[in-house]
Length: 214
Image 1: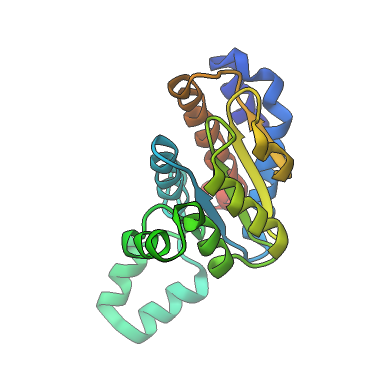
Image 2: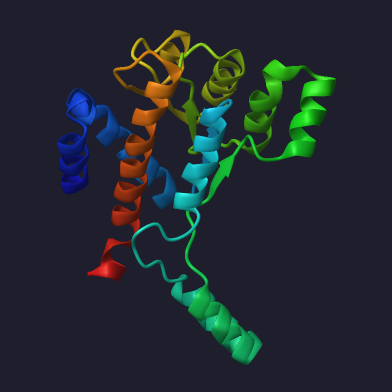
């Protein structure tokens, strides 16, 4: 983790003061996965795209090898022969992560029946369990639908990580860990969010699959 953090702040010196929150966020994610939990991710607009990007890095190999669990590999080979062996060869161990922006039918149903502010909160109410994490992205820190999701997460016993711009906005009070990058304009905030969540994904992957890659 330390090497990845050093690389991040060497390339983005304006993030050096955020080393500890980033480290804490990575540790929280690792703890969640090690305990069998999952991560929910939400955001609007460009942050919605970032949520999907994060899922892509965590649900399959990012930089490291991720063999399936030994018992799954064995069962696939035993039960399904040649095709099972192909699945063992091709598939990678994923880290369960869900973007709350991807389910169009569900989102439009919630928006139509309940209201647009509740598109993420309803999903946290349905998916979230104690021990899971909600990773919430908002460049302003003031997106109501993101704050509502954080409120439900707190009520259900999820840990919360916020990624925002410089001020942290209103949602900072709902976050166990806040990563408020030192920019205010939306585009510039998002430019800094990307290297931060890439570093988070690399740190998590290293901790979860490091032994397989030594």
